[in-house]
Image 1: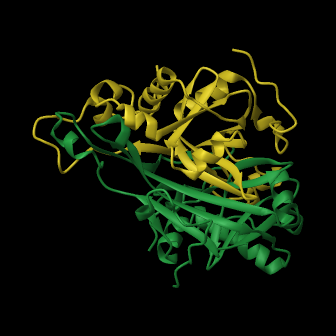
Image 2 (image 1 turned 90 degrees about the vertical axis):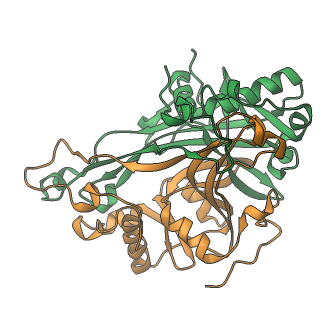
Image 3 (image 1 turned 120 degrees about the horizontal axis):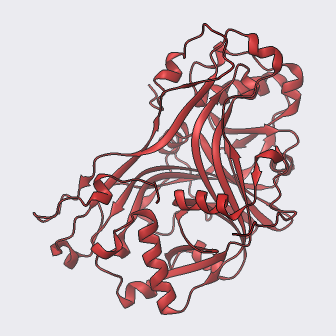
Length: 219
Length: 219
């Protein structure tokens, strides 16, 4: 996979050694996450809205109701920023100043285009489901024509993107290392609980393994 | 606490029954989270950047290096959108169409102002540390004058804000409830791991309880 070329806009300026532009790193972060924050401007005001996404090759898909302001605004081809952040831990330094977080984030800039073609649209809907819960698509009632029409799918090319990553222990000032203060990292991760049955579940179906042992690990 | 008045811009339009405008709900979400996504426009392009925050009363503070493009842009008084999202679970419906996520999010619109006054700035730095790890501030080496100068703190009034919340089981189409498909919720939460010692830790200090038993629970 070829690296993304940092542009004036995606070049990580603050702490540039935390920046990464290779598609392997960027894709791995996008594939582990499933919640993004979409930034766009409407009437001069920036908005940041959380939503799901999926990736296929060098395309990021987002979707939503055809009635949504965000989807309608984005479908108009305006500039968009999609950011995915994975929080990995709290960094407790000896000084207040050097406290930080370990994280991996990706920022994607560009313009989204609506997916109009039915087959690509259906494929994208499958991707959304499979991206969040692998194996689910084949178990569920697929979208009807009217559900397909009520859903807007947008494709954002993964052309202008960068990752920013912080890992590892605190980085304290040299003279602070002698202070008798505990320092280190509190790791954080998203952990699934036991599946909660829908109260209207008819007797019979047990939670599938993808629900009982939910994991973001990918082969 | 008085409710926020929904404005043309913060009124939840899609699925309006998910909208909430009371400050208790909004503050509780802000106090449980500690990572926000900040949206702003620079050179016509929206950017969405993850960062920490803290709240005091009806003010949200964000901070960063005085050299950061984001902080410099925001300090100019431009329109900003700060969004906090807490992910609570995956909603597995019987139909692909009704799959969803359980979440609590807050969207804040406004303009941030730099905190110049030294005492308020120091207080805000204490808030950032305490908001993420309660009890940490008193254990660490406090900021020096030059660290204070190198840090920009911005205050965003919590004046125009709304929450959006989804909880509970899937909402399937009535005729789908008879399908022999498992449906329910996979709860998700952020769970701390065992603290990782800084490899340069001098012998002596053990991890404090706020690191060994890290929790977002608040009294």
